[in-house]
Image (cartoon, rainbow over all chains, first blue to last red; front, side):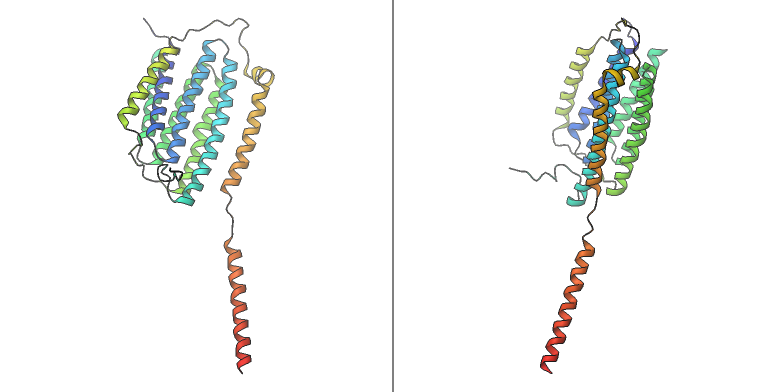
Length: 103
Length: 183
């Protein structure tokens, strides 16, 4: 059985998603969490364009991917600004140390 | 040949993403993320999504990288603490299960022939998905306003200095008045 190019790309998307989820689970640094989120969103965007290509509607896939890029960039910008403020106020970027809502 | 290029691109993207995740310092992680962005852009270009490939290359590999480097220059490059909150074997097991499930649900990708021919991105974006465009405009505006609000620093030190100077002047005046009364 020969794999088509889209199936090979699907393999890459799953790999990227796995790396992103794993990083999200084990990371404690706020800036690195933003970075790992970027990896996850890139995988999702590639999957959207892949689905558009497979369904024969590449324009729709590209349109949704463009929206995802904009939303992801805004999320990254606001999250980085929040990280700067957190560092200024608490002196650390470790999410385990800055959690003050402990029961 | 096309299969080989897609395989190489996929493996390179996964390798760069893994290096970005496990790197001890944040600056190499940022550069690896830019590499992931560039590789994803090449994949998008090969898929025929030219416009999104250009946007991804300029925004993902350009703007986000610059933002991350600027943030690192402000907060400093912290050494990454490798101890995770949850056990790593459990995380690997969970992620393997998720990856197998996702691959099982999506595989195989079958290309459906287009009934109405190829639809241009501009037609989709400006005619069928106009709401998305307005949402993007609102997102960009709110993002810029949010960043301006978050990064603005309140300069309260000059006011405090003024108040302290006024207090010192009042104290000196009161001391002079006391000396005159004693005299």
